[in-house]
Amino acid sequence: MIAVVVSGTGAANSDVINVDLNKTKGDILTNFLKMEQEQRAMIQTMDHIQTVQQLINRIASMLFYRALNHDHSKLNEPERSIFAEYTHQLSGSTYGSDEYKQFLDAMAPAISHHYSKNRHHPEHHPSGINDMNLIDVIEMVCDWIAAAARHTNGDPLKSLKINIKRFQISEQLADIVENTIKLLNSPSAAADKD
Image (tube, rainbow, N blue to C red; front, side, top):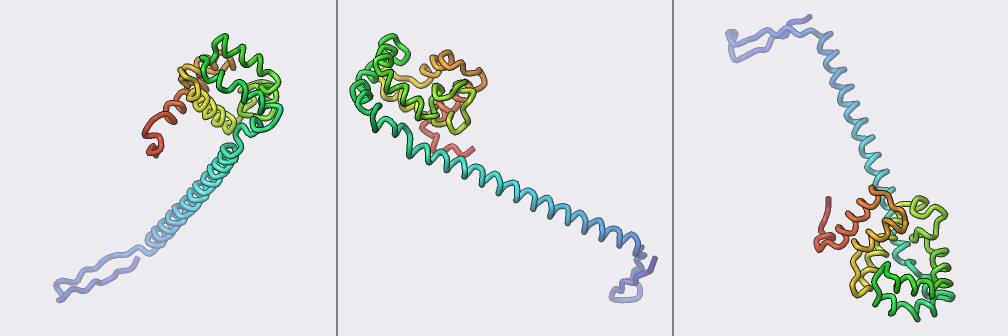
């Protein structure tokens, strides 16, 4: 312990402060370690943020690739001529109706080829939706919304209800898909930031 005299403007204003150097060293070390711990935490947090950003950018890149190449197999045979013949008729039918199913049956060679070349269709996978990844599901949902828009009485939420049964979609995934359809159909979807 040492005594430090802090002088004022006169002898009467001088104070003596007792300083315990051992305690001061401990405080300095504690503060240093705390500061070092905070810096390590910030570095780890920034590393985490950067990793998440890189992964989201990978997903965005995959989605961009899917957007550029969506349904390209329809532009070539054996799909092209069959889809050219039936697309207009399909758009005038109600999704899931007997008429719609008859058109699909008539289009079987093109439909079968299409499913085999496009992994955003549950039929592409041996176990359907259960074999799909989130990139596949996002493209599938976008495809369902766009397909519903082509039908005279199309409604992606009604189509979802049909597809829940058709593809045995779990309740949890059905809720997620419904939320996504609502988000993408919302006029403020582009402005949604959270």
